[in-house]
Length: 68
Image 1: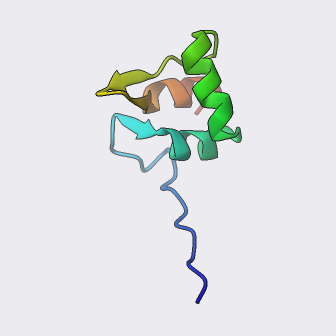
Image 2: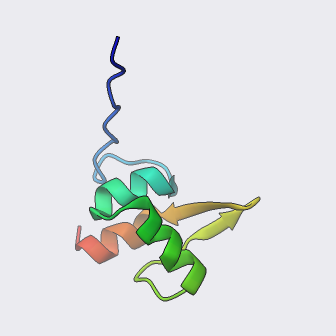
Image 3: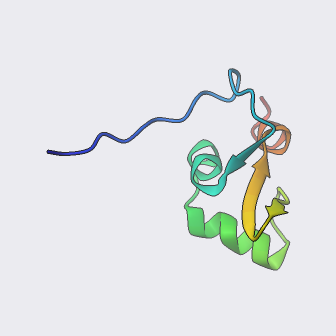
């Protein structure tokens, strides 16, 4: 049996303040590794929030980059 991938909620309907790397990468049309590099180098268009060693990407920042 093949597992179906769950598609993230659209940014307009998103109610969370921040997204995990996988969902942020989907919306930004970038690989997850690209977002991790942005976080490591601190040179990307969005700065993530670090929560207990995990990255959370602000929805407001993603919307600003995409012009939504």
